[in-house]
Amino acid sequence: MQTSYNGIAVPTEGKAIEYSNGNFTVPDNPIIPYIEGDGTGRDIWKASQRVFDAAVEKAYGGKRKVYWFEVLAGEKAYRQTQNWLPEDTVKATVDFRVSIKGPLTTPVGGGIRSLNVALRQLMDLYQCVRPVKYYQGVPSPVKHPEKLDVVLFRENTEDIYAGIEFREGTPEAKQVIEFFNDTMLKGGKKKIRTDSGIGIKPISITGSKRLVRAAVQFAIANGRKTVTLVHKGNIQKFTEGAFREWGYEVATEEFRDQIVTERESWILGNLEQNPNLTAEENAALIEPGIEFAPKEFGDSVVAEVKDVIAKVGATHGNGKWKSKIMINDRIADSIFQQIIIRPSDYSVLATTNLNGDYISDAAAAQVGGLGIAPGANIGDGFACFEATHGTAPKYADLDVINPGSVMLSGVMMFDFLGWSEAARLIENSMEKTIQQKFVTYDFERQMQGATKVKTSEFASKMIENM
Image (cartoon, rainbow, N blue to C red; front, side):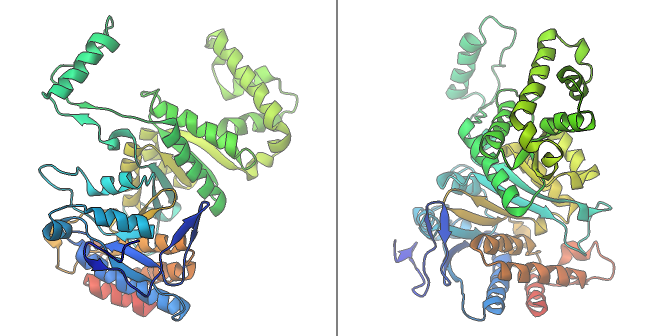
């Protein structure tokens, strides 16, 4: 481990967080790297760090302390090193394992496509975890925002975000198009237009299963009632559809005692209502209109019913399945309306990358927007917590932006470290401050009788409310 990174000395009073055999060991004086971020990130980070330090001090009375260590990325890094993401920054986030960051600019005109994506891929941070819940007093566009309390597990390294693209008109795009048209699609009706840009969407068994595994583990550890696999498998059968299939596989093979699938619950529930129900009758109940389907399909559903009863009838039957975690799936476009009209039916969502990007922002809009939407990127042995919004450069250094996204990402970080007392102080003081209508401009303009305050003033009031 180095004594400095990017020419910045490592705090000598702190210790590195360690990781072994799947577990983190957190000292009472951890060194935590931070990237303040670009644009408004500078104001947000200053306010958030004050709140973090105050919460730790109040919770532990000096027995614990975070030693913050700045690492460079984005505009500040480029000005000092002519590199948007210096190698030393990556080394530091790897060496110290847990870090936190503000929003970063995506460089214009070439170079790294996205610094956020680059950090995730370099450390294989395959879980993008986005909790979405309502804090009392926050203005919302829906009638009952308090009914939405979900945690999204978005796969973070594959799908469109793998970044495999070829610009229209380039030799590479031409070569890919010719290969598909002349070889893979030869003799068929489908053809790729020759003036197309090309993107490749990889979704693997490895990436899918480890993401769903993490989502189910979280649900078990936190008493969540459902895990919903979100996909577009009705159209993209071998990528999105495969994600769904592999998700069910990992859930049933690795967590059999703790989970029940939605279809299993239908089969077992039907049998409980009528113990004399035949497999054929049960199949007709879970697949209405089965009599009009091909015989092969009907036979497969009957076989499914018999298989479920044989495998989990004894362990999950007679109502025992009702205490298990429900594993179900929903089509991606459907989930947008589901979280609005039936929000309490959902608890944990496991999604492919692009779907998760859309859904997490849409869900955040129901409970106040990205200004207070936290996030984390987690891998095996590493975690980076981050603001989920952009840099808003026109508001940079004006001390006006809502710092809630970074602050609540800090709440996630402290919970991750096992410092739940500090996490609750931050969370509760933020809610209290908002209920007092002492808020930044984004909330003030939506709240009657509110006091508009600066970013720094909001932080000061939070500390007072602790």
